Image (cartoon, rainbow, N blue to C red; front, side, top):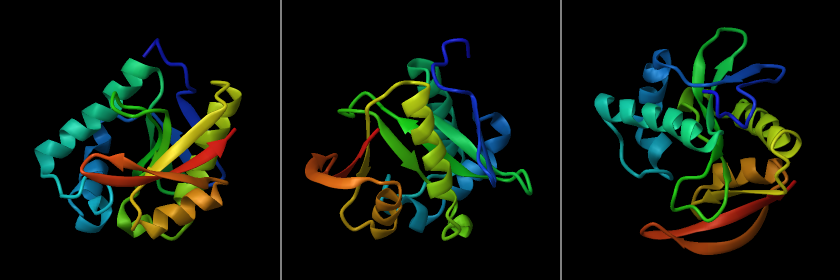
Length: 171
């Protein structure tokens, strides 16, 4: 992708963040077939072919915007654990930092570690001054991650068929 504004590759002590590729399909499907993983995002699971569209959507977002979610992989095993990165679809008011890991990788600090690298890249490479995370009010785990990243609750806004809390990150 020659229109990339963001760095195509980020490293943290335990993780590599890279562009998605077709071989990540199984990892994407693992997340989107799990009721608990989609409970506070899309609300219902996807079948295998639908998860292909999600994977294609991540790549398309990066191509259209010049930045997007990264495939987060464990350095120790090379295993893809989920998407973390910048997200700004057409209906969003402003760019978001998002995360969604397969449930077996929850609780290890990976989302915080990966999102910290993404926020730093948005600040230094893209020269952005602000990012947000849209989090459904009942999603306490994501609110904890947002607070750990330095995000502060700003407002509750109408979002899709309900509401979402905005956590803002001044950069």
